[in-house]
Figure 1 (cartoon, rainbow, N blue to C red):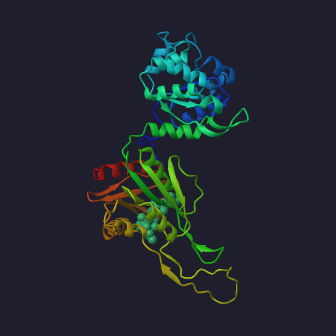
Figure 2 (figure 1 turned 180 degrees about the vertical axis):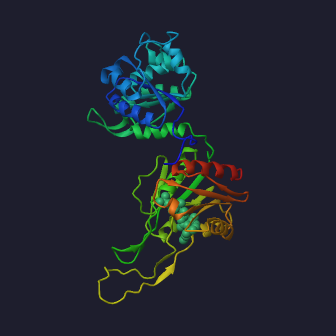
Figure 3 (figure 1 turned 45 degrees about the horizontal axis):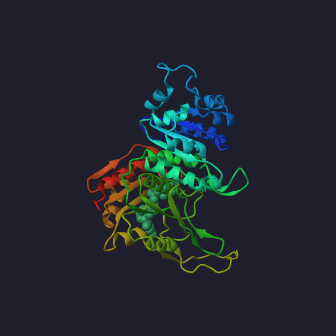
Length: 403
Ligand code: PMT
């Protein structure tokens, strides 16, 4: 098992106060506590009196490993002022669920319970995830309160649109714990690509032989999806042109699903307006059957000959555009990585290329990569693809010409 102690990722070292106000979505705050903890954060839960009626403090204590707070007099705190002390040692306060009532009190600056006093006395960022009935959310009073909070610098997460506990459908559902975790991760990521448009390719392509068979490869899409996520967290507008993979679309990313190399090429070129960075991670099939059969090819005892024709090289075509974006290629090699990868970078005139050995990178969650650019070769240690993606994005941001 590799040693990842050097990997500063997720929410390791962060301290998050999770505020829970009264609403049926409070049950999801239990899962959220666990999920934020799994990302490495030290989670401290503070419930309003109404929140504690939905889920007990004991549940949050068990899930976070820390005492859960409900009032000013709870438990021991050296200075007896939890509304000050809890907030001072904290990287962010996330209130989820934030009820209409709690949002109104926050907007008006109330401090009549521990959570609202803590929010008022904070010197750290405050994020809120509203959860309420759709009429309550759309009521002008709530709209005013939310606008006021946003003007005060509070970050709004959601709400989602969908089926509600009351049986109605509309805006007001609290974001799911997974989406809230993603929002927290994005919140703490430096916005190195703010104002930039990034287009990526990822996954394999599938080149049809007949209606049921085709030529493909075992790219999982994990490296490309990790880079799309890292680019979105870094503040970019991200378009991911993806071959067939079994991964969900990353949060904050517009995914365009394609099958073949020709489709991938068309979709990439349709997205070239205003693009700053193009990252070609896809394992594009170099050849495709010249004439796919319209009907299923029947088995016979005779040898079957397939005529293959070359696919367009999408990366080379983008890099050759008169106003080409900053192009990043990938090279998957079975041996002699340095020679082949640097050779590909120069042949396609790329400012940057990421090389990996097939045995290291194809399919798994980890990879070992070397970045090649005008300044030389920069090997990165073996690590999860999510971590490597962040490092690659940092390098792109460093080399990207100013707008
Ligand atoms: O998806 P995973 O399981 O996470 O695996 C990740 C990966 C190993 C697929 C990835 O890290 C990787 O190396 N991708 C590039 C694989 C590849 O096809 O390399 P290549 O040497 O054949 O192509 C060189 C570059 O040209 C690549 O950027 C490729 O996307 C691009 N290309 C290639 C052919 C083609 N017709 N069009 C292209 O754009």
